[in-house]
Image (cartoon, rainbow, N blue to C red; front, side, top):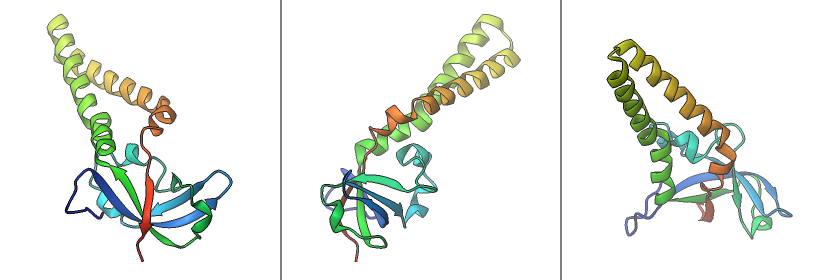
Length: 147
Protein backbone atom coordinates (compact mmCIF):
# COMPACT_ATOMS: atom_id res chain seq x y z
CA UNK A 1 0.00 0.00 0.00
CA UNK A 2 1.36 3.40 -0.97
CA UNK A 3 0.24 6.39 1.01
CA UNK A 4 0.79 9.93 -0.15
CA UNK A 5 2.42 11.82 2.71
CA UNK A 6 0.78 15.09 1.65
CA UNK A 7 -2.75 13.73 1.71
CA UNK A 8 -4.66 11.04 3.58
CA UNK A 9 -7.85 11.19 1.55
CA UNK A 10 -6.92 8.17 -0.55
CA UNK A 11 -5.10 4.86 -0.41
CA UNK A 12 -3.01 3.69 -3.35
CA UNK A 13 -2.23 0.08 -4.19
CA UNK A 14 0.24 -1.36 -6.66
CA UNK A 15 -1.51 -3.61 -9.16
CA UNK A 16 -0.89 -5.56 -12.34
CA UNK A 17 -3.21 -5.29 -15.32
CA UNK A 18 -4.86 -8.65 -15.92
CA UNK A 19 -7.30 -8.01 -18.77
CA UNK A 20 -8.59 -5.06 -20.79
CA UNK A 21 -12.00 -4.40 -22.31
CA UNK A 22 -11.61 -1.15 -24.29
CA UNK A 23 -15.23 -1.21 -25.50
CA UNK A 24 -16.53 -1.14 -21.90
CA UNK A 25 -13.59 0.98 -20.68
CA UNK A 26 -12.80 -1.67 -18.05
CA UNK A 27 -9.33 -2.66 -16.91
CA UNK A 28 -9.19 -5.69 -14.62
CA UNK A 29 -6.26 -5.60 -12.22
CA UNK A 30 -4.91 -7.78 -9.45
CA UNK A 31 -3.39 -6.14 -6.42
CA UNK A 32 0.29 -6.94 -6.01
CA UNK A 33 0.55 -5.43 -2.53
CA UNK A 34 -2.59 -7.06 -1.14
CA UNK A 35 -0.57 -8.37 1.78
CA UNK A 36 -1.38 -5.04 3.40
CA UNK A 37 -5.08 -5.87 3.05
CA UNK A 38 -4.76 -9.22 4.82
CA UNK A 39 -4.93 -7.54 8.22
CA UNK A 40 -7.91 -5.38 7.25
CA UNK A 41 -11.30 -6.59 8.41
CA UNK A 42 -12.97 -4.90 5.46
CA UNK A 43 -10.79 -6.32 2.68
CA UNK A 44 -13.54 -8.56 1.33
CA UNK A 45 -15.96 -5.65 1.12
CA UNK A 46 -13.44 -3.15 -0.18
CA UNK A 47 -12.62 -5.34 -3.14
CA UNK A 48 -14.81 -8.43 -3.24
CA UNK A 49 -13.46 -11.18 -5.46
CA UNK A 50 -10.10 -9.46 -5.79
CA UNK A 51 -8.27 -12.62 -4.83
CA UNK A 52 -9.94 -14.68 -7.61
CA UNK A 53 -11.14 -12.47 -10.42
CA UNK A 54 -9.30 -9.21 -9.90
CA UNK A 55 -10.73 -5.75 -9.48
CA UNK A 56 -12.63 -4.18 -12.37
CA UNK A 57 -11.56 -0.55 -12.73
CA UNK A 58 -13.33 1.90 -15.05
CA UNK A 59 -10.86 3.86 -17.17
CA UNK A 60 -11.54 6.04 -20.21
CA UNK A 61 -7.99 5.22 -21.32
CA UNK A 62 -8.43 1.44 -21.10
CA UNK A 63 -6.94 0.90 -24.54
CA UNK A 64 -3.63 2.40 -23.36
CA UNK A 65 -3.01 -0.39 -20.85
CA UNK A 66 -1.68 -3.85 -21.59
CA UNK A 67 -1.78 -7.13 -19.63
CA UNK A 68 1.14 -7.41 -17.25
CA UNK A 69 1.59 -3.66 -16.95
CA UNK A 70 2.07 -2.40 -13.40
CA UNK A 71 -0.20 0.45 -12.35
CA UNK A 72 -1.23 2.39 -9.25
CA UNK A 73 -4.87 1.87 -8.26
CA UNK A 74 -6.49 4.38 -5.91
CA UNK A 75 -9.33 3.96 -3.46
CA UNK A 76 -10.70 6.74 -1.30
CA UNK A 77 -10.31 6.90 2.45
CA UNK A 78 -14.08 7.43 2.66
CA UNK A 79 -14.57 4.13 0.86
CA UNK A 80 -12.22 2.45 3.34
CA UNK A 81 -14.10 3.87 6.32
CA UNK A 82 -17.41 2.68 4.86
CA UNK A 83 -16.03 -0.83 4.37
CA UNK A 84 -14.81 -0.91 7.98
CA UNK A 85 -18.23 0.29 9.13
CA UNK A 86 -20.04 -2.45 7.20
CA UNK A 87 -17.63 -5.23 8.14
CA UNK A 88 -17.03 -4.53 11.83
CA UNK A 89 -18.85 -1.64 13.49
CA UNK A 90 -22.44 -2.31 12.39
CA UNK A 91 -22.28 -6.07 13.09
CA UNK A 92 -20.87 -5.38 16.55
CA UNK A 93 -23.61 -2.86 17.35
CA UNK A 94 -26.23 -5.29 16.04
CA UNK A 95 -24.83 -8.15 18.13
CA UNK A 96 -24.70 -6.18 21.36
CA UNK A 97 -28.14 -4.62 20.85
CA UNK A 98 -29.86 -7.93 20.10
CA UNK A 99 -28.16 -9.71 23.00
CA UNK A 100 -29.00 -6.90 25.40
CA UNK A 101 -32.67 -6.73 24.38
CA UNK A 102 -33.16 -10.50 24.44
CA UNK A 103 -31.47 -10.77 27.84
CA UNK A 104 -33.69 -8.00 29.25
CA UNK A 105 -36.79 -9.78 27.92
CA UNK A 106 -35.88 -13.35 28.91
CA UNK A 107 -33.14 -13.09 31.57
CA UNK A 108 -31.53 -16.03 29.76
CA UNK A 109 -27.89 -15.78 28.73
CA UNK A 110 -28.29 -18.76 26.42
CA UNK A 111 -31.22 -17.20 24.59
CA UNK A 112 -29.31 -13.92 24.33
CA UNK A 113 -26.24 -15.68 22.93
CA UNK A 114 -28.25 -17.69 20.39
CA UNK A 115 -30.20 -14.61 19.35
CA UNK A 116 -26.93 -12.72 18.90
CA UNK A 117 -25.57 -15.49 16.67
CA UNK A 118 -28.82 -15.51 14.71
CA UNK A 119 -28.67 -11.74 14.30
CA UNK A 120 -25.07 -11.95 13.03
CA UNK A 121 -26.02 -14.66 10.57
CA UNK A 122 -28.94 -12.60 9.32
CA UNK A 123 -26.79 -9.45 9.11
CA UNK A 124 -24.14 -11.12 6.97
CA UNK A 125 -26.72 -12.87 4.78
CA UNK A 126 -28.32 -9.49 4.09
CA UNK A 127 -24.88 -7.99 3.44
CA UNK A 128 -24.13 -10.84 1.02
CA UNK A 129 -27.44 -10.42 -0.79
CA UNK A 130 -26.78 -6.68 -1.13
CA UNK A 131 -23.21 -7.20 -2.38
CA UNK A 132 -23.93 -6.02 -5.94
CA UNK A 133 -25.58 -2.84 -4.73
CA UNK A 134 -22.80 -2.22 -2.22
CA UNK A 135 -20.07 -2.94 -4.78
CA UNK A 136 -21.03 0.18 -6.75
CA UNK A 137 -19.98 2.28 -3.75
CA UNK A 138 -16.48 0.81 -3.79
CA UNK A 139 -14.79 1.92 -6.98
CA UNK A 140 -11.12 2.23 -7.73
CA UNK A 141 -9.36 4.40 -10.32
CA UNK A 142 -6.05 3.99 -12.07
CA UNK A 143 -3.85 6.99 -11.32
CA UNK A 144 -0.66 6.02 -13.11
CA UNK A 145 2.07 3.48 -13.79
CA UNK A 146 4.07 2.02 -10.95
CA UNK A 147 7.11 1.34 -13.13
